[in-house]
Figure (cartoon, rainbow, N blue to C red):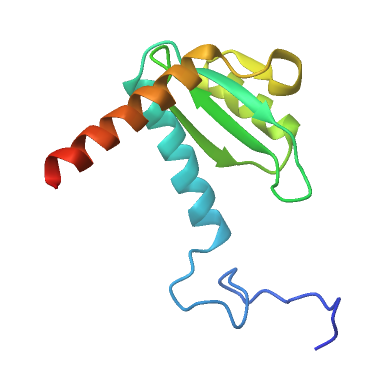
Length: 123
């Protein structure tokens, strides 16, 4: 196989040579959408932040709740992220323009402190 050869997909949508338990693209998309919908439905004041593609990662959407809890998932592009946020009925922001909200940093700090406290209790 050449260095820049394209992999061909089988009828089931998997890539030959991929792990046998690999999830086909359609199933992965459905699982991601279900997860994001659940995150929005079970948290208060969720907002979406679109993170641009870099040399290391593809475009992602970061959902942030009022208390700072967050989750991040890959999306094909910025347009898809915006469409998804509108479908979820939440505001969407470009992280390059707005930056991350302070509540994300505060939540991360609280989680780090809690992990250290639990580790100290265990031993």
